Length: 333
Image (cartoon, rainbow, N blue to C red; front, top):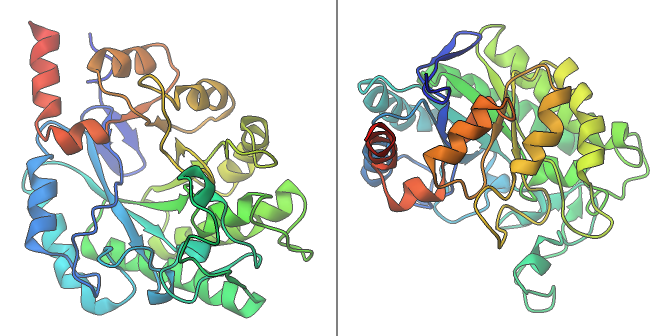
């Protein structure tokens, strides 16, 4: 029996199989962050046969916006569009989650961050601070951080009201919570900087506020930037030490991806599989891994060998909306 097509229950979230369409930025909302017909059509085209869709990173405050036409969840006025998206996907029998985020140093305008340093993700794409349009961010005050934490909670409550089946907190790819976690971007000298535990303090506060907002039954995923892949940044060893903190905080599933250097990497398919191989043995909650996985055979191997509970199929589904059905037919033939 195929393991990847076996069901999985996470709190009140029932998945018919272990294949997940992970959050991928589309930049096809309106400039105010509203759902568009094009965005709904994109998800409907990719819903058939998938176990779970996690909708792209959605900003919790206007000042935390990363892209001009990024999807937003910062205001109740956005709820009708989000509800329409949920209802249309649910009609196909597919669970739908939402990723919530704040860009921090990567914000479009007036960026704020843990520390007044440029996010080194720019170097990943061959850019220098002099050539980039990114400003040096202002260091967040404790009051700023309190307001952002509240915004995450309100965004999660809106996600629940809109009918999403789970919510994922974005702590990877060089965005704000990843900036707090990484020593490359967090140079604070207060209780939110320095040690691993201190650098995790704000992400853990956000997790607590989100869990309180959605209640005990709605699953909360956390996308962990588990390896910065830059000198002086977090390594997989650091993240293995961080996992118990996240589990104790009540995270229901760890979604493993890249840290400050982002998610792009040259190399063979499955370039983040090593994260799952290292973290799954020490995490007593489900683990999701993505990263260039383009074959059902690899997805099956990851689940069957216990290296991961869920497998994200991202870029392959962007280019081939019916990837799941085609892959399943190939497996059966």
